[in-house]
Length: 249
Image 1 (tube, rainbow, N blue to C red):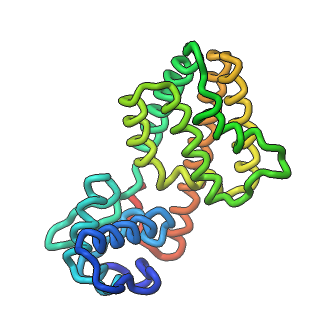
Image 2 (image 1 turned 180 degrees about the vertical axis):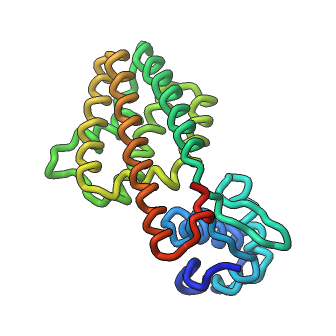
Image 3 (image 1 turned 45 degrees about the vertical axis):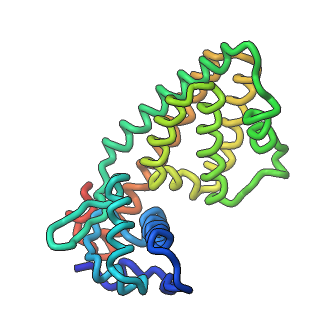
């Protein structure tokens, strides 16, 4: 059974009558939020009944939402309507980061080789955010995490290969739960601005080798910081009395 304090999700989401699909979407988003914000910890076990009671809904939308999260790899089905937040597998996350590097370097090379860059489109939007003067930088780590994701996805999309962009979005979704941890420290926010600006300038100048090298270094630093913070958070969770075997690390 789920620990009583592990899924305190705030007010219930029961509102005016809605279609089952939209209610299931609400449930899906609420659970996903709790996973991403570590209100439900890796390895935590819970049941549909317990979760439905806390959300104030029936088991049906809970089951639909959990099935969607299972397909996305965030939860695991257990016997007799039991579920588990997928334990952390840092080797898997690091492998996904490596895939990111390959995709983004290939995209940058393709982008720099294009006859014309659309600086009024996606690249122009990136320039407005990442080439802004320091006084205009966004300091909210949560928002910067979203902008960081958009930066990398936009670079790949700008290369013009929709299949590559879709694969990159799939990888991005899988690592989001840990990637956002990179922006819990102010110095990482500042570093991201500086590194993104340098990468963007290299792309605009069609210096593919330089942009590719900086991308690899940038993603490598992020991967190392995420690993450090994740291990620290899991250690703190164990210190609060959660069994070590629930973390999967």
